Image (cartoon, rainbow, N blue to C red; front, top):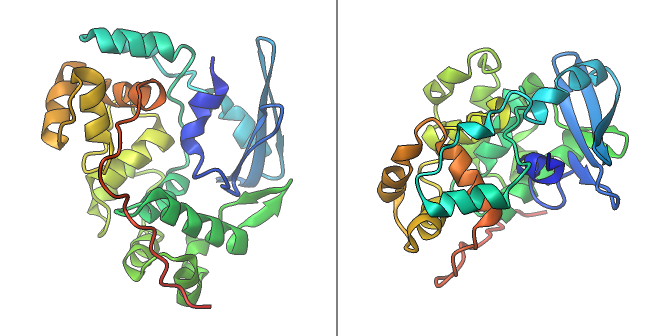
Length: 274
């Protein structure tokens, strides 16, 4: 299996305090488990995957390691209907869709990424974790769900996250999302795009489609037809892959050439004052 590309979806930018990649390729993730904070380091020696974990959440992280690496995933369920998809499968050998089983830790960065450039969202994620996360083994552990309520409003401002995203996260912090992720869109500020982003990472959902994404529809259209499409066109192209639509998207993200940018990039805003 390809550990780097399987786990890479959980990294929020190259400087994510909760996700480190060593020069030798070992991947370290920090997580707040049901048993408490923990850090997991995963490496591969020849054909053997090795893992070590620390602190209160260590046993939970090791028990859930197979799901994180996609042991429950079924890549063979994707039956190609386009020659392009056949080539994608060949180019992404060893990639699986894993699940963290931590809905909250997938939700917070997804909300921060709503309708803003990734660099802006990742800047906020870094600030909040560096100031309110727990240090463990040179890795930051995100605060537990209820602890996000204790972050003062001025610290949210310093992170660069506007009040609307702060309010969405604070509202969600009161909800039982770990056992009832199907109710995410009942929370004000959480729509289908955010729900899909959470289901992809926390549940390993192979069919979750992030409709409304700034880039994905065009990338899918270009990969499958040579032409960019909008969300409606993307859904039409993915219809033959019902049940595996996100898997197709993920393979495209990993293997297919990125569309050439012809317009200006979304600006990374900075209205913070220090």
